[in-house]
Length: 492
Ligand code: NAP
Image (tube, rainbow, N blue to C red):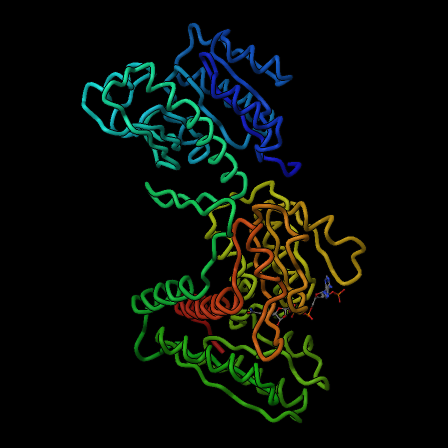
């Protein structure tokens, strides 16, 4: 994908709205490219496409069942990498497999305030007038089972005058159809549309990104973990998390307390082992090994960073994979988090937040700023697993904006306060800020929130984004480790 949303228009008639879209594209107002006009018969819409230099294709429908025809259409769309299907005066009912295949990727513009009066053109306007409606308008909606049904994206209304005729009403509504299409396609392209059941959540395409509320999502995840644990709990053998903290890093002390609190809320006992800053590597490893073989210990984590005289990697390597609930044993990363390993909590938090956006990841460009073994590298691996095209940006990258500026997904984990401003970001991108920095006594991320929220499609705040989610993902891993230990009868 070259970063511009590719749309395919399915049309059978005049294509008046298609002409408006072509004009918007020429004027640079359309945040997408009309890559194909596909018709089921020769019609003015196909001509309008050809005249504008757009590929216009006629797929013959004679003698084919609805499913067979739609299968051919789907093949043509796939060949051209179409990401959004726009129905403009398309006089065919879509088959169920086609609609399911392109769930929330087919939009239709209808000349009434659906669901009131489905039907076509002047008939709809006649029905509005006959029923004495004071208002009418147009509806842009996703298509589900029927052409005129599906979650509504945008509706525009007009007043119906006392002496209104179907023709005069059509004249009033037509320009609004084109605007609704433009706004809807742009919002889709910028990732600002989210569908929740029948509801479409649309953030204002010109003002701010959808905020990914890590606190709220974290509460939900914790509640899910609590319920899961309640179901599987063996009272004589409750889950226990051992948290090791070495030294007196102020932020680390706060984090371990938060982790303990979240565990206890879920029904997990958490013990904090606070060791002095001069603890030796050997002593630390001895404690790790003690917990590795302790039957009562479900999970074990070491709060980072460790004091400089301790080799972090050597200590993490000693954590038994079945108990490595923070997922930071290097062997786990090497095995790409295959069982018995766990996905590192922060990377898992990043992925869960991205999942919340509903953005399809397969084939998308992603950039990860930062290549630490704890955050950047696992996030990269997980995005690759989701079939993203991933670029890693680090401190030596010559032109970071080259990668970040075309990224549909941007994850920033560099520990540089507010460094990433809007000039790094592709319009409508999903931006996940992992950074936690202190600046003038305040907590800030690596992303300059005020600048980026005006351009991104989705953004996490700091605080209140990845931080709380990391904690609930750790808890989720402990519950999983507990479940595994019950199933496998893990022995010392
Ligand atoms: P780290 O180990 O210090 O790694 C920083 C990475 O950023 C390195 O790969 C570095 O590149 C890269 N980098 C530094 N400056 C850069 C720049 N100007 N442009 C591009 N890349 C740059 O840090 P970390 O442990 O990954 O943590 C990163 C941030 O996330 C920190 O603010 C940390 O506090 C935060 N964090 C948050 C959570 C959470 O739960 N929310 C968890 C862990 C960490 P080189 O490799 O070339 O040096």
